[in-house]
Image (cartoon, helix red, strand yellow):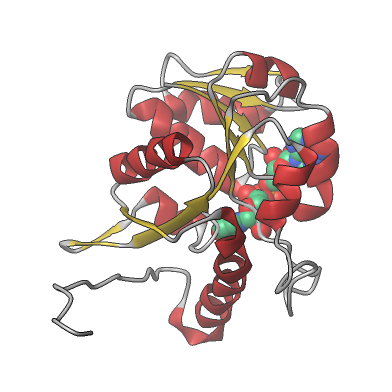
Length: 215
Ligand SMILES: NC(=O)c1ccc[n+]([C@@H]2O[C@H](COP(=O)([O-])OP(=O)(O)OC[C@H]3O[C@@H](n4cnc5c(N)ncnc54)[C@H](OP(=O)(O)O)[C@@H]3O)[C@@H](O)[C@H]2O)c1
């Protein structure tokens, strides 16, 4: 799979390098392709990963991960070029600067705003509800951390499901894109637990059993 990364920091760097290590064709879209951070990322990612401008990374890719700070998202999309038909994974949380809450929510979400700003892309919300360190290692003992995702395009969701499963997550379809209204506040729960004494080394588990008759 050809994957472009917009936002090559903690989240984009972790997911991009893991996908590259797993055999995907990854292009890191960056404003600083020659920086030591990007060169380190390429070294960690393996031979096939490359750095390019954001627009080149998008043009090269069928799947694009958007992992910038929320306040940069609209500019990043505007500079991304033609996103038509691409699977656009929104991993962002619209956090207030002090992380006390969300700048968008309850009646809309970052995921839905991204879809408005990139109307021809196939937006899937995913990878927003655990820390990048858990994206690096989603398996805890013999248990896989859940990764909820949501979106309105069935094929795009299947692609994201596969990409999450390849990393080791237990991917769970949370429904249409407007469920991002729930997944983004869920990230606040993760943040409050991580910084409230449990540390960043946490994940969530999803349990299922057969529905009972009449339930
Ligand atoms: N950190 C986590 O554990 C975590 C977990 C889940 C979700 N998230 C969400 O994921 C997003 C990224 O978080 P992060 O921790 O990875 O942030 P980060 O480490 O600060 O990285 C942000 C990246 O975005 C790039 N960027 C900023 N403005 C840009 C623009 N206009 N065009 C292209 N690239 C731009 C930065 O590049 P420069 O170096 O050029 O500025 C940097 O590479 C946030 O929305 C956050 O809420 C974070």
